[in-house]
Length: 392
Image (cartoon, rainbow, N blue to C red; front, side, top):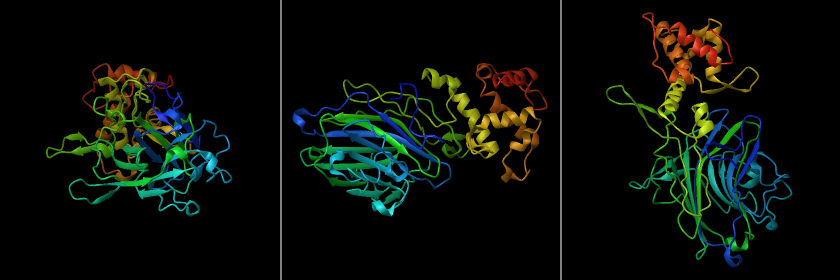
């Protein structure tokens, strides 16, 4: 289980199956499954926009050994021989980003409830119903944008209710869907809570930003308002005065509420988290400066903070820009869609400012530039020393 202060990332570019389990088993009084409530915030980021394979899931299972499970559409929970067997004793909430006709998937972007296998007893295209108009708005699970899912089980009525919304939005009054299943006939005592992420031919990052679970009552709220904000191009809105405003927080923390099963950790979009934030879990204005510097590089280069290198491996955008700075080819990193239609001095200044704010020492000092709009020699040396010991 990921410790407090760390991002719960289930998969990366090399691992196609990942798991996270709550350390304590779940015990049911008298062997009967009680009512429970679940809420979690997640993000799915695919190697290619609008295309991914596999999916992620929350599950309650009799054990933690999934060594025989397959990746991709099997979600890391089943294989061809175990799928659908009644002795699996597993309850699954799937976030499916790949349509598979074998499992009767309704599309390649849906939320579903599964019992012992991958053919959902109920599913619905990802999205939410507007409280005022009742209209349905689609959400793309693999957009990279954080979303929040709520799932409630009522032991008396055996009703399962699932609700989805963008992170930061209030929980919609109308759920995404409702179905019924007597989980006392499914789950064993004890059982284990966990998450799985599984990709196939397309590299996909499945991450859990925060989660909360409670028996016989509502899950404690996930507080998203008091942690540092991720700053990415899609989150920045312009007001009437052309000032940048953050449009989404993208972060979550779970708080300790007595004996409820939950975890607490600082999270954020990969590439925007300062190294000291990952180590200590403590946010500060300096970690926000780091994120802003990454945002500057993303806008200037037209690329995500984590990019693919020539060998199709993950590479940090800041390292790529720094290498060009060392080689005297800094302007080659500017977004090619601009077709050289930009002020070279201004672009160079933005790129260098982005690099300097990624240096912990320079974030603590005032950033200077000389009249030509370039960074001072001392600042350039500091940035060079901080990145792999190389000097510009």
